[in-house]
Every structure is written in structure tokens, then in C-alpha cells.
Length: 303
Image (cartoon, rainbow, N blue to C red; front, side, top):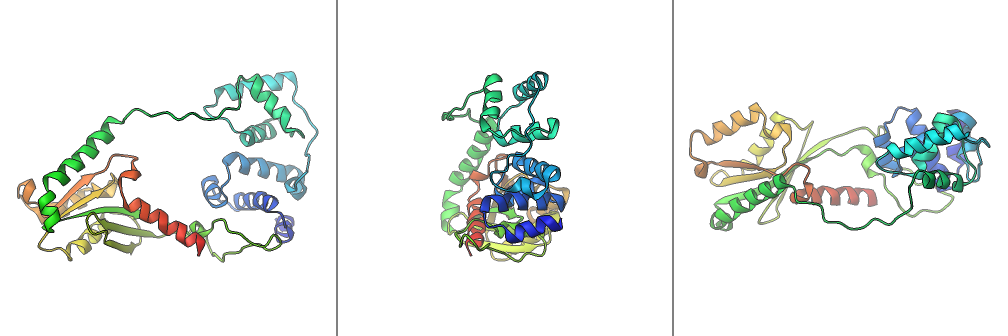
């Protein structure tokens, strides 16, 4: 690790730096998903350079390093081709990592890897745009939201009913690290004690006025969800509140249902003080506050 740290301290090339940081982070116990998010690299990239480092030290991380001069036997080539045919997607870095990890072979020329891809019946193509079939569940839930908004249009426009789109954001310290221009011989450093440090923010954006409410909590759970809805309600005690959000477990927990029953009692649905409606699963594009979270993360990376 000392040799790796010394290499990082003296490294001037951004590509070598990214390789070294990926190796260091994985050796320190960071998960592939954390490294991929922070360094904007693939899982295959991480595996490749970790294995190269373990086999040949920091020299393997340098540009122009040719690695081992080994080659695959005919039998091993057939194994690689069969492996390629079993995959659902293909990436040159993942192929390099697979061959290195499985057969301890690193080709000096990229063409050797391309030949294997061709022999597996693969070709380099530009993706074509296609229109995926509509998800019936997403269509139905979106229609339900639209129908509710239309049915209550007068009440919403008059302010008697307030509509809030609600969501939780769980940023980690590493989210502030992004790309920026810098002098080639100087590294941009951001002091972070623990890149895994995490917080939870509850947010709600008003459907009509765009008013934003954000409150920090220890985590996303039933009790904090109840407290956040209570915080919204204190501003609108004499108005109905419609909450649009995703299907997180704590949005539909027994504790939250009990809270709704305390507020709404046995009144008919049209007289409820709080009405909650779910977005379609895996459809963040339907919730406008998702765009707010993205803007915040992008802003932090640019500061």
C-alpha cells in the first residue's frame, strides 16, 4: 500500500491516477458501486487494474505498460468465446478483466481482444432508437393521478387542496466529488473524512406554487415520514393535503396507516384531510422533486 500511495502522490497523468485510485479504494474495502459512482468507471475497469496491480505492482498502472506476454491456447479461446456468448452485454474492459483473472493473460494489442469478440459473433454497432412498450401499471397509476388532479382542479386552484410531491434523498459524502478543470500537474483534493457518511433529507415541492420544503432526518423510516407530513400539515391545518410519492415501504407501513386513520378518521374519501397516491414503480421521472435532488448534487459538485 505504501508503494501505491507514493505512486498516487507523484502521479501526473489523470488516467494513471484513476487506475491507482480505483485500486486503492477497492483494497480499502469500498464496494464496486461506490467506486463506480465516484470515479465514473466500470466494474470491469476496477477488477482489471486491481488484478494488474496485484500481479505486477504499480508499474502495471502506468500508461504504455504491456503487461504479460502470455497468450491463450485454442482451448482457452473457446472458453472465452463461450463466456462471451453467455453475456447479455459486452464491454472491452470486462473482457480484459475476465481473461486476466481467469487465465492470467494480458494481450499487448487491443486487436487480440477484438478478434475474440468477432469470433463470438459480435460486432461494433451504433445503438438504434426504439420506443419501448408502455408499462400498463405505470400508465394506470399516472392516469389515476391525472384524474384526481382534474377532479379536484377547482379546489386545488382555489387553495383549498394543496398538492405536494414528496421524496427522500440519501446523499453520501462522496457525491460532492465530480469533474473539474485543473492544472495538469496539480490534483484537485476535497477533504472528506469518510466517503460513506450519509444523511437523509425529506423534501416536498408544491405542485402549484413550486414552494420547496426540505428537512433533514437520521434516516428514511415510518416515524420520520410521519414527522415530515406533520410538518407540512402545520402550515395547512385548514386545507386538504394531497401527497404524491413513490412506493417506499415506510410510505405504506402500519404505523403510517395508523397515523392517516387518526387524521382522516372514518370520513368518506372526498373529505380526507390527507390523501396519498403512489407513483408507478421505477418511474422517478414522474416526480418533479427528483429533478431538484439532481440539481442540488450537480451544484455541490461544482462548488
